[in-house]
Image (cartoon, rainbow, N blue to C red; front, side, top):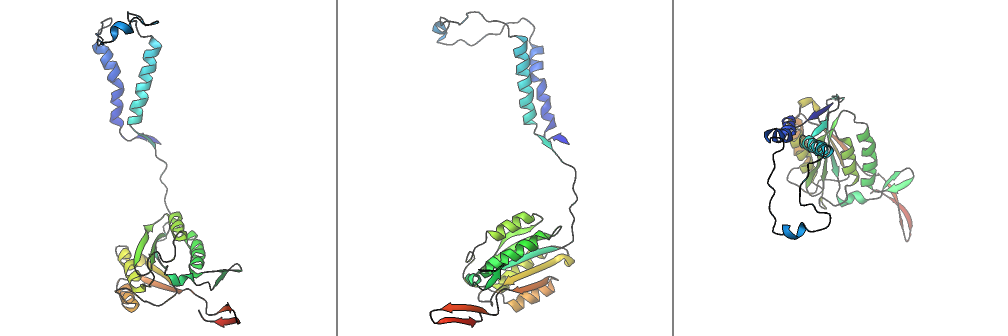
Length: 248
């Protein structure tokens, strides 16, 4: 369906017609007198006498004027209303991007990668399956910050998650503050829709709120909190004296 943002501007189409109507036919119009007119009139091909504008030129000018007015009225195409399948969940992803997430103790498709890369692989698939859910993204290190507010635009959430880098939010791990920020972003949502998914690899080392206190706040706000630990229980570490199995 095509509509106009400012349909009343289409009245401007009548302006040339009104001007033509107000001026009697055959009436001459005084032209401005230029100081250089005396030598311009002597140039080859320049006539000293005016001539009537051909009809096709008048029509062409009128068509151009109509197109300009139409552009000012801002034609726009509005598609049919689309109902999004809403499942009734608001999911806030809270992801640790502290430098400890650089530990290469994860394996995906036979390739050794660090913890943050593993989180990106898992979340990429997880986000793709959230049809109808609203997702948000909070990244945290020493301080948490909202990378993506709650939105149905899953492509943007995936893109900004892929572009997140280690250490962007500091070198410490403020788990409690990150959970607290996610609860703040969800408190205005319906009570049965508030879900927080926390992905981290370490213990709380910074921030004003402890994880225990953040859990109490989440419970009081009826926010379901899921915590996922990232990291292998064991890995092979190679050195000058050979390889040894360690718990990273």
